[in-house]
Amino acid sequence: MTELIEVIVKFITSYIAALGYWGVGIGMAIESANIPLPSEIILPFGGYLVYTGQLNFYGAVMAGTVGGTVGSVLSYYLGLWGGRPFLVKYGRYFGFSVKHLEMADHWFNRYGEATVFFTRLMPIIRTFISLPAGISRMNFKKFLIYTFLGSLPWSILLVYVGLKLGQNWAAIKPWFHRLDVVIVLGIAALIFYFWRQRKKS
Image (cartoon, rainbow, N blue to C red; front, top):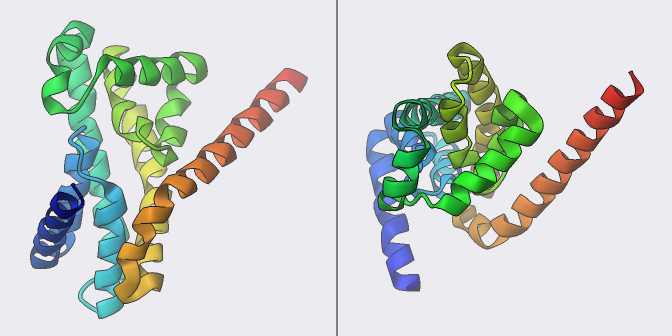
């Protein structure tokens, strides 16, 4: 299994190295369209290419952010046009399960449209939240703005980490599940803060 993962990582990084900004953007679009291609590889490797001088930091960040937004739009329209029955029936063919839909539904129903913004920094859910947004027919302009603004800090963080690690960029992989926990706790604290503020007013 480890050897297979290494082959996949090598393929992805070779692809990105050959295409530069386009490689980062297309890779992030694929991930955000619910296809399991981890941004934890794409963006840090983009940061490594910044380290080597092949890419510009801001260019890599924007490529990742725009690519993620484009992929999310595809997911939005999949939810809008296909609806829940389509996703339940065919979702497994592109790595999507009923459990993922229930998770995304829970967040979307509980916190509303702003969920599209803050879940972009959360593990797993960040790639699936576009589907219930489409199913609920969320205003597309708001969806686009929230998605772009939510994807931006994620791209900045991972590209920056790859830049700082340089040749050791791949060392981030074993730490990412732990980092995801920290991010989730931070977002939970932020939600609690806004909830308290709303309750006081």
